[in-house]
Image (cartoon, rainbow, N blue to C red; front, side, top):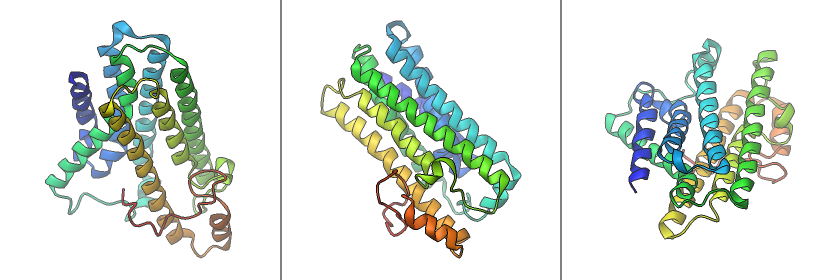
Length: 263
């Protein structure tokens, strides 16, 4: 419990950047919180790390730093900010109470997401088959997510006014979100041999389902934005109707009407 609270404090510190810019609670602050939480794990359990658990922590630090760095770079680009003006909710009208609520709930989610690694380290379980399997799945997700971001940047530089349907985007319309889900699936799977009681199961499941919900909410926002920008383009309509939105080969083509996806 003490370790959990320490990690929550670290997540709160890292994501507090959202008080400067509201959306940073769930973007820049998200990546920074994951990285800082896992640096905390390395420090707290430094004397009992195995190869597998050390790699888990390092992979999560790399994941968080990559995400935070990419989002910060993107946020600093004048062209991106101009394109997203009016599309992203501003700080106007968001009360301090609402900001604190988002800050605390988001930080708690970030700790829950990483809880499978915490439970493994706290229970001294070391490296087992599921730890290795989870590492492979998470590494695959990180590669997918990074590749998708690079391909989108390259495509937008070549043709800023066109939607992206090249590379991984041929298989799924949100490959970066898909990669994110794969990454956290690996983290959850890695703990299947560790969860020792109902509390640990609940924490791990809430963290996993929470990030899946956030990803589908992000896909819904993206679909609404793309429909607004490209809805009159026959090529976009054809692309949308034939390419799954989130998971390759799963015929789910739209989440726009699912208003419960409000993340």
